[in-house]
Amino acid sequence: MSTPVSTIRNLGPAMDAACARAGIYDAETLRALGPDATYARLLRSGTKPHFIGYYVLVMGLQGRPWNDCKGDEKKALRARFDALKQGNFDDGLSAFERKLDEIGVIEKGT
Picture 1 (tube, rainbow, N blue to C red):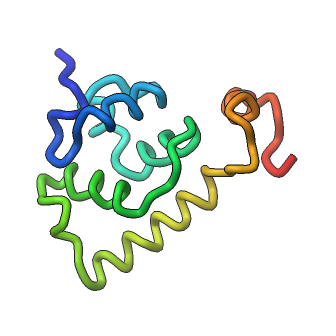
Picture 2: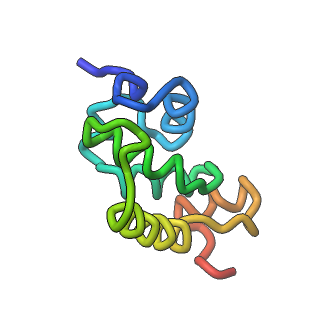
């Protein structure tokens, strides 16, 4: 049985919609992917990168309040976010070019 993404703590209807655009249709799939693979898919499907959105996702998957991330943990998550953004988001591509890239029609960096 599948449950909506928004049943995960901190996540709401906007995340349901963003995940659906990325091909993630339920909470079970999101949990199986984990936060980094999920966020990478969100970025590749056109979601604009936002650090708070990333750590809200991480905290939610841990069952923690969204604002529970602090100090060294937050710094480490920022490094992971920056790496995800660098490897999965190119706002120089149009939505059409992003789709072509997702299916392997164009090479990265072209």
